[in-house]
Length: 207
Image (tube, helix red, strand yellow):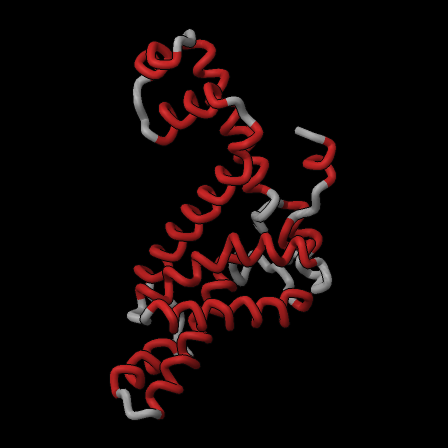
């Protein structure tokens, strides 16, 4: 781990400072695609989904400084889903006022209700997938091509170690080591945005 990584604050701590443009840019890049895809699954057109995702980011910016982590009330990812559902409800309310009955039905499904088990499960999968993809994008440039290909072939493509080793001209042991190095780095990068990390919980007044 580089000195910069060792001292880097969690992204979710850094964005509590609304003036931290670097942190906010990183947050937006990380989470906007997640919110956008969720909106698309609720039937929005691309332009509308993009607008709602932007509203979610604005809402987070306005409330994150007051956000307190409480394990009894759920995780940051659950809170982000709640914010997203609220903004979707606002969207469908505006659409219903224009006479769209389908929008009105969607409002009834969203306002004053919790996400269904299937919606929560879909959100969890999408959240974890997005954070993992983002972390891999972030760390890829830190490794030599052979190291990354060894990781990708065995961990992502799930090919046999012996097959990947032969393809790359590496020993099986070297492939295992390469994979372990990359996975460890990805985990550290994920931890920088994971509110379930104990240090991050403490900063947010974990209950």
